[in-house]
Image 1 (tube, helix red, strand yellow):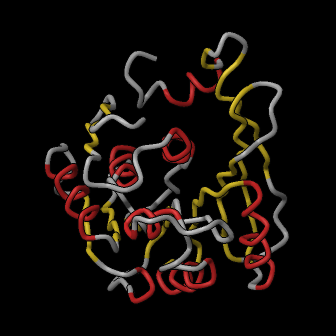
Image 2 (image 1 turned 180 degrees about the horizontal axis):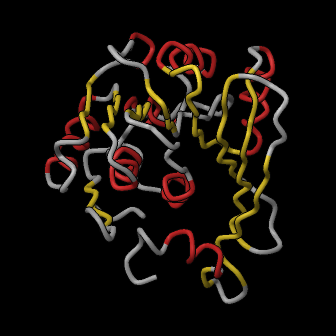
Length: 236
């Protein structure tokens, strides 16, 4: 999805100012993440284009605060929100998430964080910020989440499979748990390469695990993927 814009059924996301473009994985996260019953406020940490914030704002009557540290991406997200029909529901803030403490806590926090811990940094600082944990480590992300979430709030996070163990370790150390997990496979017969997880404080609940295969033989979308994405994707 490297075009200068990506058109969804409810809105259009322009992305020419953003280092990280709209990805299928992020679209899956937004489609799969449910808004909890009684949820009034959602926090999107690292909004980028504003994709997840807009998807959440179209799922329920909620107010969304979207944080973005990169100035160009923040401007892009604000433009995308302004062109949507949810401009009065989404607020994009140019802020480092490490320092953010909301006036009111959030019932749902959603994040697609930087995740290349061990790979070499690239030549573009903007892309490094978007893709590497150079400005927000998992520990710092978790602290921000704990400071801003309600007692019974939920967290939706998207990570590569090999990075998810780091996140799981943090959860275990803080008596948090994964209550629902989606293993995302690029195609039938291939191992999962991404995980979307719903997390909450507390322990003892059994994790509900689901599998999603994006494509099947012939490089066509699977029925399950089409069902998940049909409310959002055009021509599916």
